[in-house]
Length: 315
Image (cartoon, rainbow, N blue to C red):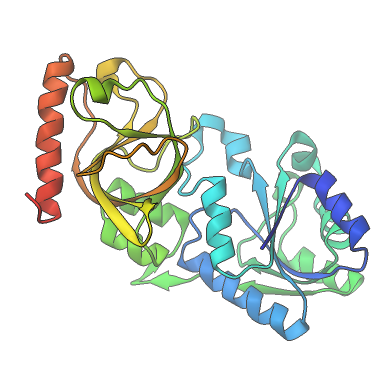
């Protein structure tokens, strides 16, 4: 799969392949849940029919993050994880454009002409039934249909995917995670929920109290869940999940301020700094809380470890 980031690289791509056309879809694809997967299947079917590459257009930051800042909903998947999931879905290319003030203020008609037609060479566009775009969200599906007639590209929309009477959406996944309903989240995602990231150097306080942890930076983003969890970690040993206990939060006992994912791995002591891991959440043990010193924290961590081992049948 090809990843193109930014208008500059898109311009270079268009100069290299001036006649390149595509079948396109646009969206956040946060979490790449079952509803997104339905759209991607339609995208691939149409691209196969037309003999053109399947392309997904996304934005960084996501538009709602640009408008709402810290008030935006927590992300389900970081950028790298999103791209990985799109690649696994069989997409030919992902184009990521920076969402800036210029992009925000661009009219819907200019977006169609400049981005879709002149830069992407869209031959068929697939969007959700509630898709809006352009300055003040003035563009909608009807506008795209008219533009398609004018510029010569096809347009089709996807209907909302329902599961058990509930609309499949990123919001529904977040709600399931906030309720610690990992079974429901897995149904909505068609896979267990996980957070991916690179193991970084932390304060190494865990080692001082006999509980070393692998720290994964959340890059200042709030996670869609918080607390202590029984987890399984992929990416350490080929084809194997390593069990452990994880804390997601700011670590109030040590006056932390930045959200971090910390994982203590059971029966594992290899150095994994710099490695990229995927932490799969299986069960919530408790909420994050502030303890009266490291001794009290250490005692609670050992209780958490016992709870997680019991969940996995090892306690």
